[in-house]
Image 1 (cartoon, rainbow over the protein chains, first blue to last red):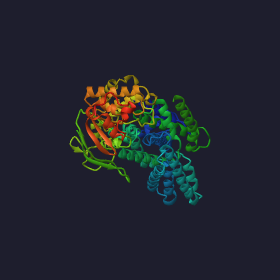
Image 2: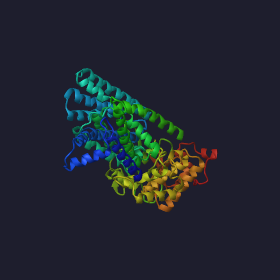
Image 3: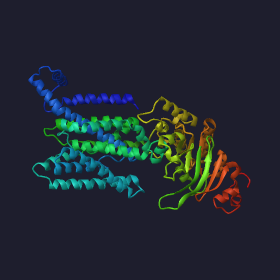
Image 4: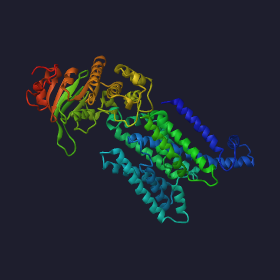
Length: 333
Length: 255
């Protein structure tokens, strides 16, 4: 594991957080935030300006920063793990139907039950359903497993998108439909402390566990028989990893809706930079994914007068990045 | 010690591939499983490695049934060299060799001892200079040496090889066989390999298990058992055909 590189990227992420905390409609410097927070937590009297800074930071910017980091890290590390475990560099949470399944599940929670715990539970069930359907469909054509998995994912995504559309059709047009539509475009604007208290610990735990699973993920990427011969219980480990990645992807859907491409492109870009060894790749992918989502989200809320949905902007940015990584990969081989 | 007692195995909805197989292999011994295509060589190899669901108490490893060993315990006992490495990612050769240490630890990365073992394996196989080269960029022979080095880094008692010279040209076949012989002599590691080349079994010496249609046709010292008549019988050839075609290697014994 390349510890220096990981520490360096961790420091860069720290700098990005400081930079992002100062960006937005309300101008505030890093020094001002630090002073206001110090005064707030040490019980010193606050000026009206400091009170505003504390409120904006703790209620608006910090949850959003944390949500961007968790969503970006979860989606990108899940993409890298899926690619290795399924031995297919073209899969991602979006392509495998996980995001579409989790969205359909969450939409059921929002539209039918209007309950936060049920939204989370249905999102997880939907995510597992999405990846389960992709895998089942891919088994129908075992002669070309890579292609079959991609087609299985496509069909699975379409099925769950259709389910979500059905829910949008029956949703209340005054409140539920606009909320559902905007959320499905991918946005962090609804990230809140309460929401993060629900999903944050699971996502943090999942990302840390996966970051430390490089040894097993490497073995699984060689195929079942080689992994078993290396001492890995491939069936149990694969199930564990698929369950965990699907869980954190579903939680990211609960927080931010559908953010496509991040789970596909960030692992590819990271492999171009540091190679495919998952011992280093997985923590690096998590940090790069967090940084990418954080900076892109800042772009969506700072550059234009209106805020654009994050999912749209990540897709627009990731497409040329993916084309570039494919081109570089091709030129190397 | 590997002890096989009356092993019969069939894939679902199929006829038995292996029927009543019994033999044993002690530490430091070498065994070639010889036979025509489809005779069950690879199935036997995979059954012993624990890749297949076989009947309980038919395979014993160091006195205990196969099914009582954990995956990590099996990895300490047996390493596997496949016909081709299955990775779709361009791992560095050195990283692949280090993966031989996977089963030694439960969590995190590799420690100094793991790196030392991997380096020793690379040096013994003579491919230290390839450690920083991506595996897909190597020639077929070099790739097979990387796979052997990974098995060696695993530090197991037995190394299982599935047709280790399959698809290699003559010079790479010789390189792989010489490397196996060197490892056997220096490390006293046991090799269990499948092959359909009788002369390779004779070259490596040790024992040979001749398989025909899933049954044992002969089991014993390779240099005594392999001769033109035995090979003609094994491969269902017309008697005297090998002699007529001039295909009897000098290393074959007299019938």
